Figure 1 (tube, rainbow, N blue to C red):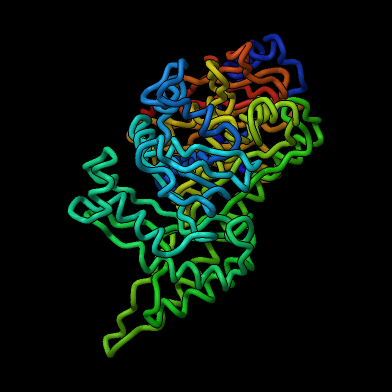
Figure 2 (spheres, rainbow, N blue to C red):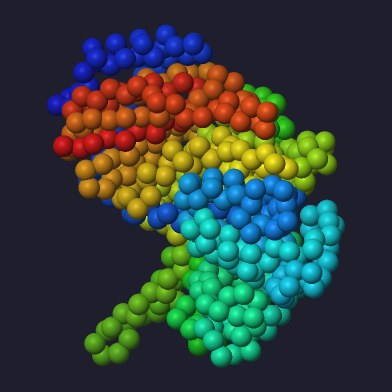
Length: 537
């Protein structure tokens, strides 16, 4: 277990006074325990890319229709059909990248159904999510407009399961070719003379399941065939993303890489730019009625997520190193190792659904609680700690569905508890993640991430225990803090949520933090998140 350096020991007198004040607050009644954290600001991990805070919007339930999209003629305040309040919330959150149209929906989506005059677009059946009939009024142009409204990079998931290489190839040209081709001119006629410059292209989704029930070998062959035609049109080079495993499925990754790798080396294909793992933290209860036991089981899953990132990154690297081959020529030149980035482009908690709520709000509609926010913060902490191994991570999903950051229905729209978890972690973006030690590697031990840039050090601390207050003493190794401020997201009831009737039940509040040179102290009540910003000397 790491210990606080004696030469930098925290002034326990001041800390005791602070903790006495904290524990006297209403609701802070659980037993307390000292918790030590050691932060090494000089031990760098990697840059916290904003893309680690991405989002995912699928044609599922009311995520798109009735959620993000209300239509141009709706009485609900909107911007050209986009729900104004949702746009404002997502822009303020700074969603860096948005993945669309699926998910399972992607592999039965034909992009031509969603372009041209809305009145002429076909009525399509959503076979994956309830056989709802959709009018395709939200298509490629509307999605790109939404991304521009919220300042997000677009990420399009292409149809491999029921589509063709030609269909995907034409979508790329339609989006990215500047002018002159029939597809580029069709885009211009549909309202956008300027190309969309879409960089991120998924080549299929969950092809081990809803995307075609393929074997890894079959998918590798399909990926190689499809990606051949995903070309650079204009000045936008595609970043192609292959379907990775469901959780930490090493067998899928091994067989995919063993199939695709030798063919690439022999010049019959290309490696993907990215490789996307999906990881859901399933729950046994409905969102607002979690038992302690089932909450503990769900929150413990983030240790497996972190392990999966380490294992999958290592597995990819081992194959890529092997594919680079031995030194070549008399000078012994070592060929550069191919690079395939790791993504988690679907993640989040997946609780049991309430049938009555699904009937009212749409498939997989799910409330977000204090527990959900803690889960989101634990996931983001994992991504920061593994910033050197990850390229992009997208929460599932943006509005109404599963682990959403916004809930919307009719003329109501609110920020969920998980929205605030993301908001509190926003200061980590573009900083350098640094090492933080807690001395407790158990799945329900304190969760911490730290990052630094210039004279600021940012900490996020999460207490996933339901019955223990943590009195956190944090030591900064080789650095001194001159001031600090903190916020806390906490509610005594871990099943508490923000509802349409009461949208501000759980929101961040200013939180006391004591700074004494190389020592920082604060209180973490059960199932809570603290965000700390320190000014360094």
